[in-house]
Image (cartoon, rainbow, N blue to C red; front, top):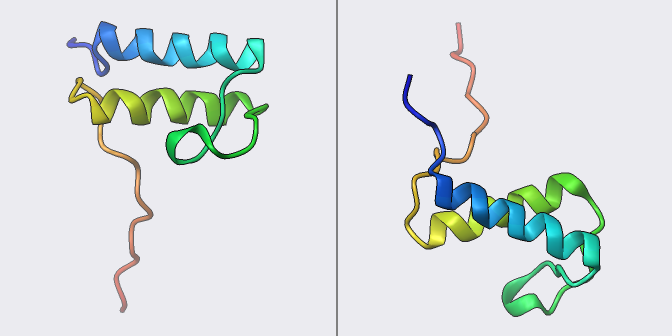
Length: 69
């Protein structure tokens, strides 16, 4: 079975997690937002950076609309 995420995308997430632990990871454009404390938010930021760099990352999950009956 093929990898869902590229190894370089995993490195981006790992880097974001380390910055979160050190307290230097910030949210928002250009890092102007508040300090990130949430593990989930750190992962999301790492994946977002990987997507922007064009690495192999699945698309964001979106809510599926229910069909009207």
